[in-house]
Image 1 (cartoon, rainbow, N blue to C red):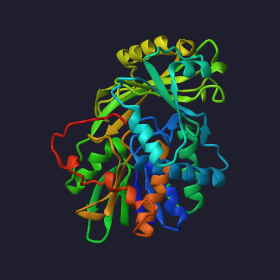
Image 2 (cartoon, rainbow, N blue to C red):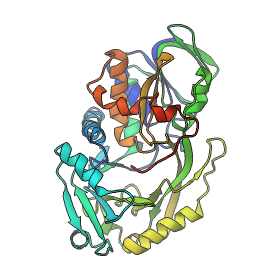
Image 3 (cartoon, rainbow, N blue to C red):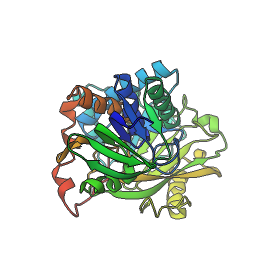
Image 4 (cartoon, rainbow, N blue to C red):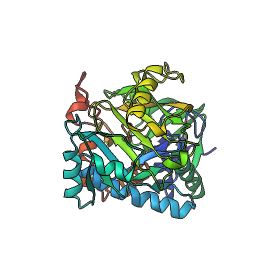
Length: 389
């Protein structure tokens, strides 16, 4: 077995698989290591759908989202898989919401993204599935939709291997050492060396950083989504019903019928704090009741018996901004963290990481400052948290 590589990617979920693909595509000798089996349910990277959108609260997110669509389009072209399905996206909120829609309109306006501002009556005229009052309004952006993690990750793995990458699963890291110009990684009983290492381990990030004497102030929660067997799933088909986000606290979000025989809904950051070792896969009945209550009030036609409820882990910096940066004390180690809303950017971030390693720069570099690993809030021991995005 080969022991020396140009780059080792630790963690082969969404961001890690993207990095492995884009590095291998650039001709880099890359080894990908995954502690579980590929496609495992233990983290945050597997399911039928994640929201992809241009409606975001800051202009740099909007710019990166545009490039994310381009990155996924390249993966789709090379793999033949359909990963992104455009449904349009609806952000709905009370007019006095905790998440002001003006942040989103200002960002999209600054970046020249077309959108519509709709009152409750117009929302219900277009999508009678909604039950709203005059105190509600919303934004519609036609390019939004869903990105399929099951297909996206599988495409990254397959294409990475076709470009020469070695991907090894069931290989947990037990040692990570900077040996002066190289990083030595022991995983699955084997020891490897590489000039660069990417840590894309999400909820296990601090476990890996501990080997290098570093820790990030991360909050890990157990979250869940529920697919509902509603009376008329065709009424929520992707060509008849958009992805949506309820922009308030609590925040809810949902999808049309896709992947299962009914729509999907969830609360954002509605779960309890946990650790990867302590989490369970049991349904949080309180969280389920909150989602069900919201759906009964505002989308009653989407309600039906639960097809199933799927759990996952959110791993969030205190500001819920991404981490995409080199370790200052170990510049040959890069850290990638999606902050529990990163799947839409997964292939783009993989491309950026490959650019930073191969070219030492990225066309997206100007927009990465907010995602530095040494930004002030990440240096605090007990920072205040704000998870609204």
